[in-house]
Figure (cartoon, rainbow, N blue to C red):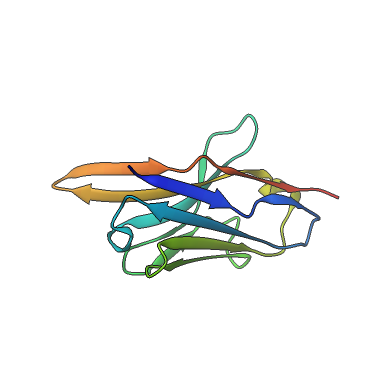
Length: 119
């Protein structure tokens, strides 16, 4: 059974920092591309950052220079360091794991963790 469990969300003031973690089980973690997505109230889920199995990273323009995605294959974990947070970063943040096997894509999602940026 695949499980992705996010942690580290909370309430922070503008300009503050948070570190999100995603713990994975039930998958061969090192083979999966991983990513963080977020969904604000009334909006569609959007990509925040991704990291490939090889460690290449990609960021949404809105978070470049402020957020850093990383992974630890030995611990089956992925993190998102979020600095200089803005009110517009408020959303539920979701962990994603994806892989393509024989042309069939497989995607798994965590339950999400709330991030609220407010004074």
